[in-house]
Amino acid sequence: MASSPSFSPLKMTRPELAVFVSGVTSMGLEILAGRMIAPEFGSSIYTWGSIIGVFLAALSLGYHRGGQQATQASNDSLVRVFIATATYIAGVILFGDLFLQSMAGLPLPSRFASLPAIILLFGPPTYLLGYISPYAAELSGRSDVGAASGHVYAVGTVGSIVGAFATTFVLIPSLSVPQIGLVLGVISVGTAVHLARPNISRQEAYWSIAVSLFLVVATVSGGVGLDSAGTTVYHTQTAYQELRVVDAGDTRTLYLDGQPHSAMDLDDPTRHVFDYTTYFHVPFLLSDDIDRVLFVGGGGFTGPRVFTEMYPNVTVDVVEIDPEVVAVSKQYFGVEESDRLNIYTMDGRQYLRETNQTYDLIVLDAYRKDKVPFELTTVEFMRLTSERLDEDGILFANVISAPSGPASQFYRAEYKTMNAVYPQVYSFPTAGSVVVQNIEVVATKESTLVTRDELQMRNQQRDIGIDLAAEVSSYRNSEPTDDVPLLRDDRAPVDSLLDPMVGQRYVIQKTNESDENATAEDNSSAMRVTTLRLGEQTAAAALP
Image (cartoon, rainbow, N blue to C red; front, side, top):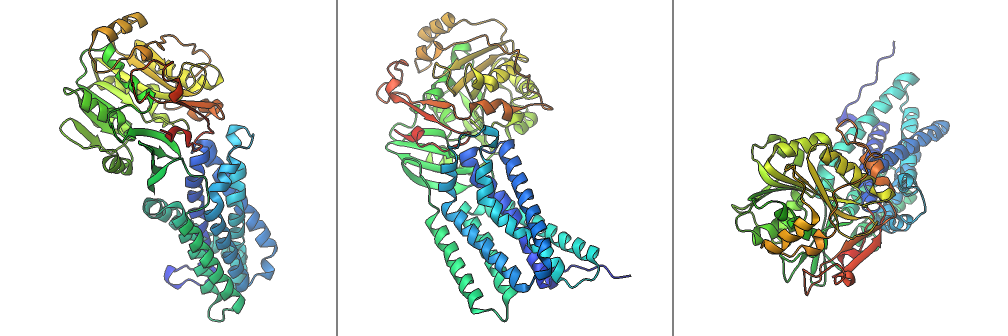
């Protein structure tokens, strides 16, 4: 009986090394694909499903074609595959952003919008890497075909595991997307050189040097693409998203995965740059006893910063899952922790589950157009928020959707879900039309209905530091919800509910710099309208 081949990471044969590196590189590229695709197409289940499907299909085709040609396999064949893979990676680094931005406008159903870009950008290098395993099995010299094949795929899987963990826990938190591509490309070139030693040909040496230079040039250039309007003052890849801080005129904007998330007036940090953030004050018209506030989602800390400045008796806690967002908010948005502003770096639902603190107001601001954590939308989560609110507490959710029409499905499902837990639910569309916009949904544990007229009267009588007459005028208290689901932990089809929003106009209205309390008509000149795909980067929202 033939003995089973053994594998030692310290004593790998050349075919074993080739298979191991192909596993590392293919898995690294797969995770990198998610980070590159997200700013243009979002990171929904459709995007990740497309990435996984394309990589599996490309590898399968490579395995099949490589198996057909395995009898012609040689050490030189492995070298050529790695050189070709590294060359393509360099091209992805250099032209990937520009290519993605150009592909974002294709008239495709939103579920499949990212598929052509994924196929063309990542299909070819993954297909090439698929050749490695059958070539290595042939070159292993094993007479037992089953044992040789099993051994090769085991080594490749170990490489994939290493690539997954290394990219996720080391490369992405430490390096930019071009730099990660450089690492994967250099690994491929280095493997090719090692496989060619000691009798490396002039042609192999030439190509290795040329491709290495191409990789370096592509990385140093940072890629060719269309930048957001303004000057980028900070840019990084966090463990959760791409983060960019952009200055345009007197406005500083925080972009997360290409989407404008928060903005600050550099000359007047407490001014609300985006009009929708003025609605954060509406709960002060519904209750006259708000002393403790929780924000789930920090971003640029617009709400928490303004609350602590305007309301000296209010203490604000903020839960933000991304530690880099917290660090950036402190360095670039003037956020300082104090006795009245406490920051917790963890998941919002986890915090609510573990804390014993109760609040007068909980603000959910962790939603973005294309990336809504479903676990923060369900009826189970709404019950958890109710448990952490005082008897007359208020829940405020910043939802991006349309107030009516096909693109309103997510808003109406969220409204229905909140209404299943809270006696009264109010909503305040911020753009006053059927376009995709920020809709502020406010739920109260108080069962008595407060009408629009009552809110307008309270706005006149109470001194809450800001005039909300225009905001209150968009009041709504009843929505048709029979055709949308109640969101539950075991069924929350958030991605499909967001699907109709793709390609719709997303209206972001900015406050009038000279008069923040101007009416909606007065502010019409400050409105910024842009058409976005889910997650598509926009420069318009950053304009001062």
